[in-house]
Image (cartoon, rainbow, N blue to C red; front, side):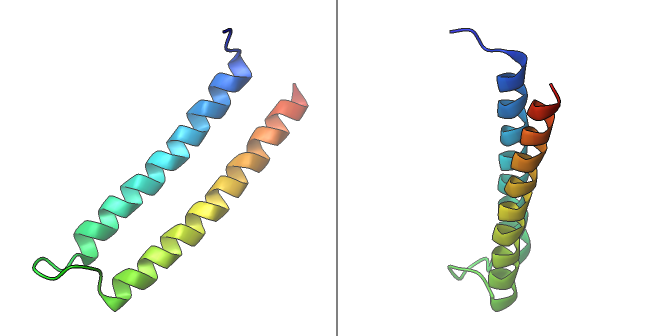
Amino acid sequence: MDIDAELRRQVAVSLLAAAVFVAGLVALGTTFGNGSEAGLSASGSLALVGLLAGFVLLMAGVGAYLIRVSDEE
């Protein structure tokens, strides 16, 4: 299977966006974690919803970028 430069770029950008999301999850867990109690606090839950919404917007932007770059070539 031959992987061209465009496919490598798509995979790299998508993996980078997913890594940003995972780093955000880890940051939320350490910032808003309740040590002895299970779950997030109310402000941690809002931060999680914001992170999820941001991830959806980030992936939409990544998709638009990749389409634009592939159209230019």
